[in-house]
Length: 208
Image (cartoon, rainbow, N blue to C red; front, top):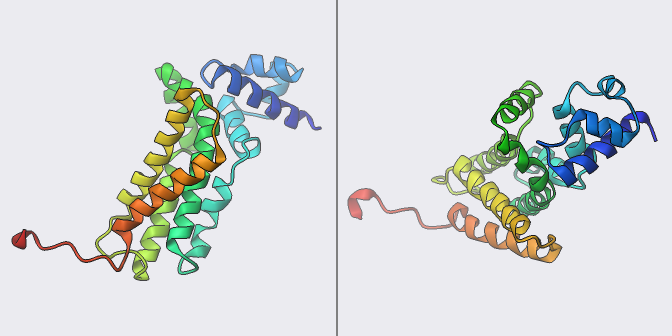
């Protein structure tokens, strides 16, 4: 195993057990068996390590699913595609919420972390952006209702997925794959009721 891999493994362990706010580069370096100076030869800062943990150590399909949305426009079922996004999002948030939530306890750290993610063109908003872009493209093809708001639909779904993960974390019960599957399917079925291109148009306000 390479030095860098050992450091990412150590960061994943420390961040999962102590939370992002309390995980220091010094502690991560010590966990990996290296000096802090050695760690900085591979990573600019703690945010670099956090991004590496998310992309390399969190067993998630969310990144690949989002990355493939453009190629799925006009292909297969919109319901199936959006359900896949919801299931991947729930799984990702269940794994990362306990790790990342602690950053909100330290305003200065949150500000620095936000700026570092922005510099890397990364951050939680990218999930909603990708889904909204997919829904807008399907809307242009007539596969999503013309009156639907793709951005609002994406935020409703991703917000619900994050809420599901929060409740799972708060309850202290380990995530259950079947429960996550059922939750994703139910959320998307409900959402698609408003996105279905075959649903009746909303009556004009003058007729209400």
